[in-house]
Structures are given as structure tokens and as C-alpha cells.
Length: 144
Length: 144
DNA sequence: TTTATTTAGGATAAATTTGTCCGAAATAAG
DNA sequence: CTTATTTCGGACAAATTTATCCTAAATAAA
Image (cartoon, rainbow over all chains, first blue to last red; front, side, top):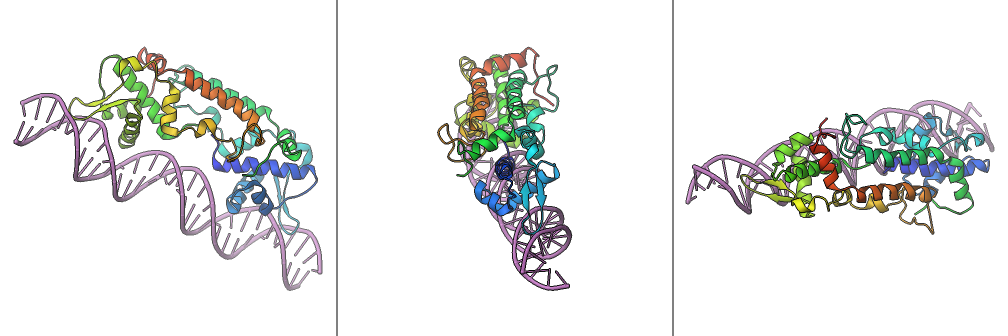
């Protein structure tokens, strides 16, 4: 469904959000540990999320990653996925055709659009805030 | 969403089904042309679909691929996807966790289950027959 | 100012997926 | 029986994704 990079990116962002809600900055090392992802690869992903403006990064001692608290509930799962995996998952044809739309559909087009819109709406309606809160109060987990 | 192999496999199977409904066997070469997929790679995929029992293959001159007509409406899109991409797309955690279910969910579990079930149901309810018929009467296309 | 710490970013490597090549096996037809 | 045709299947190659390594740049604190 999502790429490995995207899975790691989502998990990392949720973890950063939890810490940010507690006014804490968090290091790459800690993130990778808590999220059970390869350190260096996670670094790349966080780098690109920082460039996309989804998270803030800060170098040096006491440095690390953080998300401005007021933005946590405006960031949607959709934003994270889009930043990492692009929009092919939202717009591409289910069978990989270049030319596929309602007027010149592939065999699965109409059925596919329904489930994909379903996914899109879910991602757009899911805020980082609710994901982070669930993790923070122990309702959900990220390891294993 | 689906792997490239799965995309080619679905397209090829639909094309074979159309021909089979017209009592025709069809060669690898023709399939790859009509479906716009790399010949040798398509061969591998058809081979595995034949092993899975979804299509029949026949060697030698006048050989090729075919699907028993009576089975075309019993084969579901789900069967094809399952044969090629396995069931990870149906059962795996959205964030790649090993341990993720309703009792110990990842942050996106509950939301994810909904869209995935939606996908699963769509695939289970979509018959090869309807896909092939749409293509046969020109309502849909597979090239480009 | 020096040092330790932390992210940035480029180069490289490993793994997986995608794609190719070619000889073997089956088989239909002359 | 021989030949031409077609799928089978193994080895190999290319491309992409995933992952690692190392040096540079920033920066906080002693």
C-alpha cells in the first residue's frame, strides 16, 4: 500500500508529534529506536519531511525534530503520504495505464475510483493530532 | 497499489478471458502486444497464473493461453491479485507492524481496516466476466 | 574558542522488483 | 520422423527501493 519510506515517515511523524505536544524536541536516534526503523534511512525521510515543511529540524546539541504545536491538528495523514509517496497513489490508474479516466476507462476504473476516493478521504480526514493522542494515551503503539 | 506484475497479470487475464469467450486461444506474443506489457516478463506472470490454476496454458503450434468458459464468471479480481501479490495487501498492517490488530492496534489501524475491507470487498465482488465483457463491447480499454 | 553533539547530504551498497535471454520441453502439422 | 511453433524455466541484467557510511555544517555549552 504505502512504501517502506512512507511507513517509517508516518510512524516517525506521529512520534515527533507526541513529543512536541509535551514541548520536547526529539533526536533521530530516539525516533528510530521508538519507531523501530533503520537510523540512516529514517534520517533521509525526516530530511525530506523537513524540506516539505511538515516537521522542523534543528542541528547541534539539544537539536532534533519537532512540530509546532499549533500545527499538529492541521496536519493530515494525507500531507505526510503525499510528501513521501507523491500523488500517484491518489491519481494513478489501477492497471498502470497512462490514459485512463471516466471517458476512456480501463476495465477496473469505475470500481477502483470508489475505493481510492475512500482512501483519499480517510487520509484527508485523519489528523496528526488524533493519531498522536491515541499513541500518547496508550491506545495504540508503534513498535514491533 | 498493485505491483507491476499484478497490473500486467490482471490485464492479461482480462484479455485472455475476452478471447476465451469467443472460443479462441491466444499466444503470449499477442497478449503482450494487446496489453502493452514486456513479453518475457508477461510470460513469467502467465506461467504463475497457470500454476495457480487461473488460466490454462498449452504448448506447441496452435498453443497459447485460455480460460475455461464456464469458469470466467466464477473467477474474481481477488483471485488474480491474490495469486500474484499474495495476501499482504489484504492482511498486512498499514504501517508495516508485525503485531497490529484490533486489540493492539497501530495508530492508523481502525481507519485503515475500513478502506482495506472496502478494497477487499470490491475485489471479491468483481468478476472476470464483467471486466472481460466491458472490454469486449468497447466500453473499456487496456492499451496505453 | 574549543569541543561535543546533532542534522544535512553525497556516495555507495544491498535487496527487491522488473525485465531480458536462451536453451529445453511439448506438441501440432507436414 | 522432422520441423516449426509455442510455453517452461533457469540464469542473468537493469532499475528501483531500501539501507548504510562517512564527511560537512550547524550550534550549544564548557
